[in-house]
Image 1: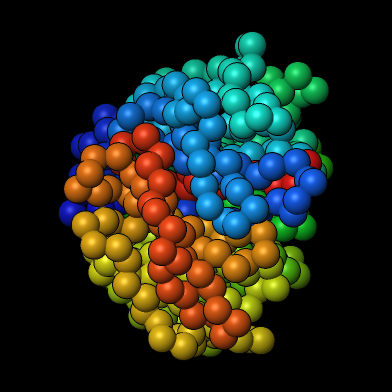
Image 2 (image 1 turned 120 degrees about the vertical axis):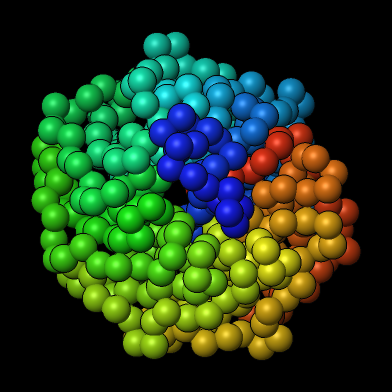
Length: 377
């Protein structure tokens, strides 16, 4: 969320503009010639729609016909199934989760019977690596985790596992499943904590290790692809909290954590080898780049921080498949609708503006863990 935009009253009322600009790392990218195309999906928290951008061979982006597609009110979270064929969005104002079929041409079509209404804000959703289950954090000042099986039709079916309350004042809690599918990690924006759970066979959750403190106003957990390290952007303290993930999923502080960033850090991207990380600093007008050490400690990449385009508030970054491009997505902009800016990534990890024109998403106020690249089909 933007600095000073939050009040508990707004959360309780489900006001979308008060919500955290938090993001998970994205590792899917542009497709080689002859493969099925890849798409970048971006939701509009303030405009209730979903933009779909086709990734061209040179890393450029073009909006697909019909985009942006209509969504529900106050979309804060979006997830894509591992096969790249279905999309699920959660909504903080309408309190719903909706599923969509994603066509090979990038078109979105709501799945019949997929809408679920909860009567409370849906803050975050996350899908297991095998695509069989979805976990959601639901609530206002306090939240709980609920679980659903993803049926063959795409309709969500409650697993029957009991809901798990997130400890403390847990409003704006955001979930992330680890790459091995064994643990669920939940950060709480209001409580400034992070908790890890073991995912049992029946989808019930068992807390592992203690609940740990983060910095002020923590955003979405970002986990390295090898599942060894967790990083959380702390919007209020302009830092990243780093954690080591033990084999059982319990957490401990990474060496040197927390690590300084520009003001109001948001949605990060981590390279597929787990050696580099990029974090937009919204109020700072920059992107911070870090090298991830063998022990999980962070150190700046050459030339970091990198300036964001003028007149923008960068809220999310996503890497291309070959990791030669970094897409920087506006949260807010003087132009009204969010745009995507293409940066080139050098061999040493430094980034610079590509010179390609910015692409208009057509969405207003892009917020939350709600921009992702489709995986390969």
